[in-house]
Image (spheres, helix red, strand yellow):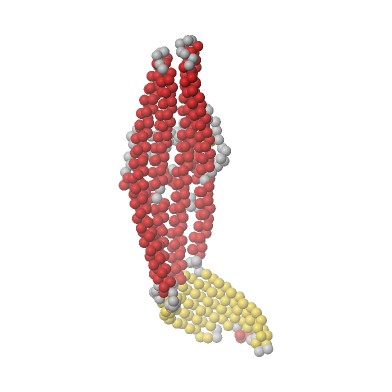
Length: 458
């Protein structure tokens, strides 16, 4: 749909004193200072650390070791020292390479020094080995990182949508004050005119009572409208996350609404939603995680068959090279592994069912919201027509009063009706804009709509 925002703000009425705040500024402040967003970025610190930990497991691991001490051998005392280092590497092919070097020195005899080197490579043939599991854990961590970024995106989408709604609530409250103040001013002018007629003897003094009641009614409504402004301002500041006592004034940026409804294609919107919605994409990635869990659970049921290649070289012995097959299968774990496999299989089926249901929910949500947008547009058009009719009625009643043929009571009814329909027209306009904003969130394109780039490392 076309962008309904323009860059030309309206002028702030002189009666509204405070710090001007545009909708763009409110959204930008919320992205920076909203409590939920800030907490989500704090979570990113831990999430990035977890990602680094998973990557570190694939690096070669070096373990040095030093042993020294006193020994008593047949009444002879001496010292013994040993130095060793073990290097292990989970290679991408699925195997594990280990290099073990040892050196030992005995002070009893100078020729007691000995060294040894052993190189072992173990490759699984029938089930996942330690290396394959580590690389799959790395794959899990990358998928989880994508899920975390989608959750951050979802948080920002929700925060921006709520900020827009809070901002428009403040706009609505401010405009309500303006409309009520204008109606009160008109009622006061009518009261002055009626008093002049009474003093001239052209109207009975009792005719002032109804007009005075009308003025008092508008005064009461004005107090309520001003209180609503304070409440809406606090709600917006709390949402944005800055000084709650800052006396901001929402500048009604011209969100132009065409006379023709926005053309919306539900099928195209559904396609966008399935490609952009963070929760749906998260479900797809969660299904991938479930598939990895199922594959690993299936392999754990198998016998472990490894091809082991070993080379050993020591100062006191000749070098040795061997290749062997090693078959391992712990007894008594078949039931546990089978249970884990069934649990993983059921979990994957459940996620498939949930994904299908989520897709159906998205299709329904898009269709419902498209109808809601169209309904709000029709209601807005009706509200505009009512404003035109009420304005004409009030002008006609004022003309009759000035001609001396009008009824003050009918004039007051026309004033109240105009205030009512203007308030309704403003409410319908806000509802229509909110319906379009909600449609953006349902599609998952709120960030794109507002030109905000996701910063995963903030």
